[in-house]
Amino acid sequence: MKFATPIWLWALLAVPAIYWILIQVQARKRRQFEKFAKSETWRWIAPELDWGAKLRKMRFWILGFFFLILALARPQWGIHEETVSASGLDIVLAMDLSQSMNVEDVVPNRLKKAKHIVRTLSQRLDGDRVGIIGFAASAYVACPLTTDIDYMLETIDTLNSGMVSNQGTDIGIALETSLRALERGAEENQKSGDNKNQEIPSRSILLISDGEDHEEGTEDIAKKIKAEGISLYIIGIGTQKGAPVPVRDETGALRGYKKDLKGEPVISRFNPDFLQSLAKASGGKYWTATEGEQEVEELLENLGMLHRSQYADRKITTYKERYQIPLFFGILCFLLEISIAGYRVLTTRRTATAAVLFLLISGVPAEAAQPSLDVYLENQKGVDAFKNGKVDEAKQRFGNAQARSPSIPELHFNQGVVQAQQEEWDPSIAGFQQAARGAAEEKNPRLEGLSNFNLGNVYSKKGDIQNAVQSYVGAIRAAQAAKDTKTEDAARKNLQLLIQQEQQQKSKGGQSSENQKDQQSKGNPSGDDNKDDQKNQNQKQQQSQKYKDSDSKDRRKQKFKSEKLTPEDADRVMAELASREKELNAKLKKQRGNPQARRKDW
Image 1 (cartoon, rainbow, N blue to C red):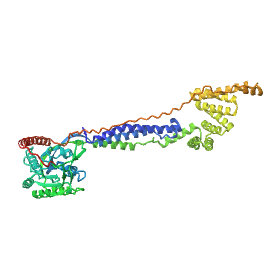
Image 2: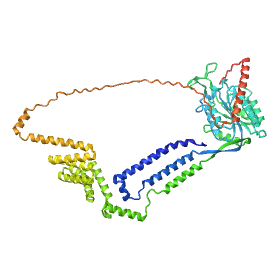
Image 3: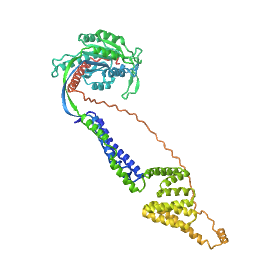
């Protein structure tokens, strides 16, 4: 089994994260419900509420999402073989790689413009075999005829003037090499497998150059191409004004401009007249490269008029698509998620029974069951108002809630806090006392401890130390039962301060006011003998770091990978390399026997 688009499998990592987030959201909602009432109470208040149903819905949704991702990854298994007939043209692209193609009279330069034209053309070639010839003063097969357009484009990207050591411009040898490449491709196509009786497809050569030809005999090769029935198309790149030929180092940095033997800068000028005459001699067509590349459309129209013949029958092994299976299960899970109710469905009899049980347990009439929510909301508004400093509004809110449910000790506690804030000591004492009694009846020791603690604070401010001490003792006892160490420690501290204050008052009771004045006059003046000297140290730290940028750029040779390259194309590549090696050895022997220096090496 394999996946056609395995990148979607990375989305599976999000499935457990989404499930965890949904669980947390569900738990948060449940905690918010429990703030209002305990879970046992909700069974009677809202018997249709079912947290388990919500969890089941969530699980089916997650499962459906999981299968949907598998479907997008397109699982495939099961081999299917089919025979495909390939038909098209044989096209050889002769690319000028001389140094004059580096001239920047067109944007960005002539060679890069030529590569962009080839890329635009390749997007419209379907089923055609394309080969690449690179040339300067010599020519070589950079890519044999192949239907793998991606491999051909990778080859185009690597072409540069440094790949041809013998510089200059010889368009004749480029056309001759292109002609041999077409002939070799036709021969190999006839010899391959069942294609011995296949018809030779139409052949064409696309020459892309600036027209600076430094050799002779080019028109003779053009006439030979016409005689062979091969279509020659030419695209010229450059401007007649021209520009100097740049010289760059291995890193691409500009070192200067090309100079002739006299030391004058070489100005490379576009020669469209020569290219037009060459196209006329071969019976082909010529276009000048434009910024909008309209010439590509006209070239495609001419190629479309050529005869495309069937040149190969190939067996293609494909895997059968199985994305329908996980897609089916995903849709099924989503349908189940929709069909499951998010709450417990109750019958009419069960609903009525639950309501009667709730009324019997609560011991209040039916019309009194509804205000419990209003009491909670009113109390919450009072708490918010008190936090925001709106004491009067908080007092009114707590009073409204207390009027509706006078038996709730928390409401008495809140009202007592507000009254103490406004220094209404007697109503505050009554509120805290009632809150402490109610908390004791409900066996809520924490609220009982807080109520007695606040009651002791109010008595202390009022000056009633005896009742304050009793209240703090009650607060300590209740806080110990509730294991509320914070309230217990605060109550013990306040209790000790009250005891010390009461002892001081008793000891001072027998002294006259004069003795008190004498003692005050004879008292030792307080002096700060152990004052610590403060030292302000402001140190400014300056750190300077110098960074040196090292712009060393290593040129790396590109390794080609092509999943579409067939064994036949690979054999042609190796054959072309062997043929190129033989031709190179022959030229080297010829140059050793009769060396010649070129005047124009651009």
